[in-house]
Length: 189
Figure 1 (cartoon, rainbow, N blue to C red):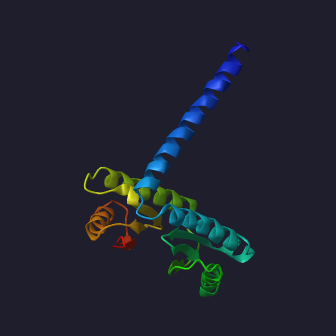
Figure 2 (tube, rainbow, N blue to C red; figure 1 turned 90 degrees about the vertical axis):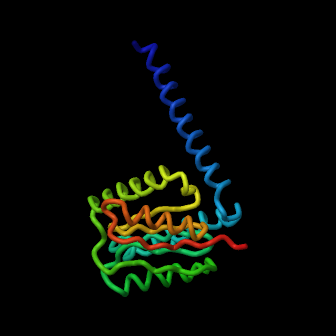
C-alpha cells in the first residue's frame, strides 16, 4: 500500500496542473477577446492590487468595512459597505490618492458589512447571471465582468450598446437580483 502513496500524490499533483492549464487557457481566451488593450488589462489588474493594498493598510477600513475596488478600462467601481460616511469618504479619498487616472464610481452603501450568508448568496447570484449569459449565444460573456454585492448586480466591460442592453436584461430577470447597475462602456471607434 505504501508504494502506491507516491503515485497517488503525483496523480493528484498532475490533476492540479491540468486545472491550472485549463484556468490559464480560459483566462488567455478572455484576454484575447477583451476590447481593452493588453496593457490596459495589465494596468487594471495592477490597479485592483493597489486598491486592495491601500485600503488594507488602514485598520479602521480593514476591520469595520467591506469595501472593494474593481478597475475596468482605467475606471474604478468601488462597492461594499461602511458603517458611516466618514469611513466611506476615507476609502474614496485613499483610492483617489492612488491617481489611477479614470473615473471613480462610488457605490459604497452606508450600513454594516454584509454577513457570510449574504456574500455566499451574492456568489450564487453571480454564478446564475454568468450562466444565463453564457447560455445566450447572442451575448459575448468574455467582455463583461459580473459582480454581485448585497443582491445588486454590477456589470462592467467594454461592449456594444446591444450587448449592454442584453446583459442588463439577463441580469435583471435572474432570481435574487434586487437591482442592476451598469458600468459598461462602448468601444472607442
